[in-house]
Image (cartoon, rainbow, N blue to C red; front, side):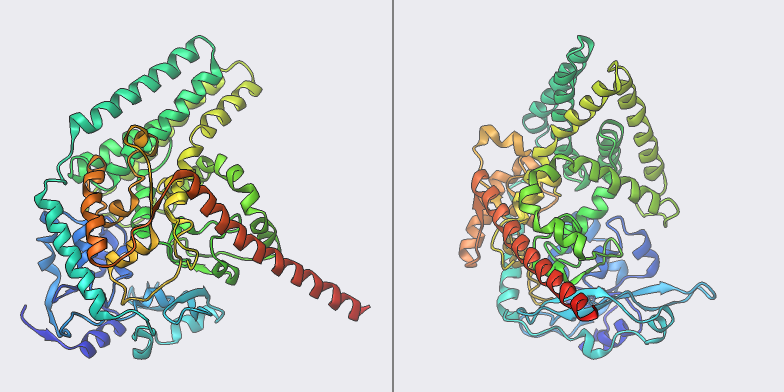
Length: 541
């Protein structure tokens, strides 16, 4: 279609309930059926309603897929000399579309209320909506003024320059052949490592060396998740069915987790990295908070629940820097809860365009199979005490993975790749929301960091210590990230953007520093609340 849409016309249709996304100069209208069927989940699209999602679409989809996008094109849009001026997506203001039970029509529903951050004019945080359920449906939906982007210190022109430079960088990555998987030199040594750990665990178990067996099994799980990560991003064979089948075998049958849950969770994390209300990978209340923003009892658009900050959570958060490594030791149990909760929630979900229902059923079979063989191992330990020791030793051996995940959230405190990668790469990085004006490359470089690691130790991180490059090019085969990171660093220098990287020890210190700063604020709030209660009781008496 060659219709030219004005900015006001786009806004009017969004307010009427259309899901409109800008792709370059083209306007895409995403029907409800595709929102339900989108393999990456509906939130991956809803977070970009009214915005130019060109960089995100190209980063997360193959060229074969992007060629099919024209089926959703309804025309072109009027743009400024430096591109499309974005709107604020309704979902980021607490608005969603829900289907009426009587006639099946969709109406606006307010699930949360947006509040401005105290020190960042561009940031909107979501808190639970206090109006009655009836009034939520009768309020009429967002207004034109709601869609207006909040004030921002960023220049749309400069962000457009970053975006254009990122597109050129992506072309260089493609021409360099870095999307080609290194099956022999990359996955060959990894498969040998997996087999060694599996046979070592089995051999030790057969000789009743149960602690050694459990440790080897835990290390095997630790290593396998990196390949599951690649498969979830379609970064191995680049073919959805093949990658998903392999991922289910490794994640569900061998690891007892759900790759479907991980992909659904991880896609959102990549797109709204480190946003307190939207990124599920930093939402760990009541146990941890990496920003004082969580003291507002925020609403999670992913989990669809309130992350309540009360006296109990304030107490736990006040100790988070002391309990940090203890919590990580139990990280895999948290993955079970999230994975199985996802499988239950999606039992009667809409059929996806990829996988239909067979992938869900295969995951359920895989999880049952896992607990059959792992349960048999536990029963063969001889006593319930030894079985518990085997259970906790095997799961404790995976805790370095959870630590790595937290380190990757590091940067500046103005601000679970698999858990450990996410801590190091993101937990100390910015949690600020700079609004829809911010470009994709600017946001990823601002919220993500690399962990400096010599090549001979890269296997401990699964090669995912190069998180900045991975976040910019999530489908890139993991074994090509080091070569690609050289191009990304050059890009960052040319665009005058910060490329954060630091060592493992420094990363741990940075994460603990962030956690301690937030913990001290939580302790102060707890003390103030306790004093207020005591004063009130004195007045009553």
